Length: 197
Image (cartoon, rainbow, N blue to C red; front, side, top):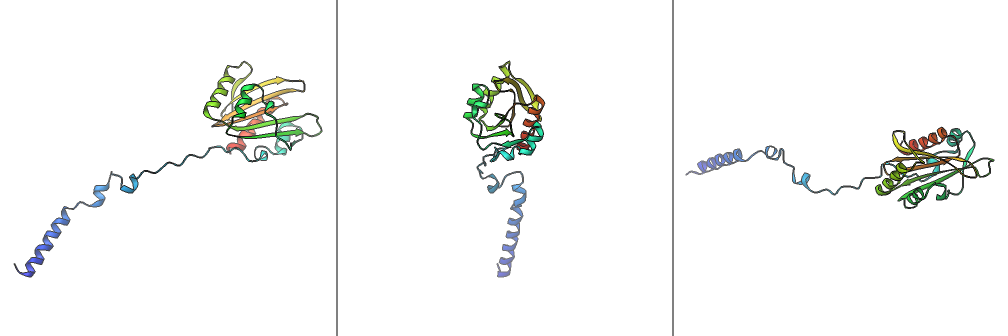
């Protein structure tokens, strides 16, 4: 075979082989590439709702004063968990993963205070608390801002207190206020809006 014939034969064989090789796009369709199929470790989801760093991120003095009809200011110290009625509520708050405890005082009113707690709890703790509230005759189940809530009233030697609990995701908002029921609900709703945006 001549040299020219050998080159022509090689070209023909090369073209035939190239025609037999499937198009990479055709073989890879419907099958993930090695890069796409590589295992990617999932990023842990961030908490949907942040527990605030500052009580002013929940309610400002001005907002709270408007909601209560009394001039309020943020107390320099947080409230005691004793402000939460019932051992189950106190234990749940005590065991919270994160918590922001806030207390406002009423200007010129002796022992006039308004505690508010924002707690991130485990699913088990939240279920135990909501189950306890549902079985209690002291609490009424409702919704506030579309979220599960419970309300109650109790009286001590100082005043009649309205208790409002709101649960959103893994966060529990607790308001204990010596105000009318509608005002207490409005405070809890404003706190919920501040946290959920």
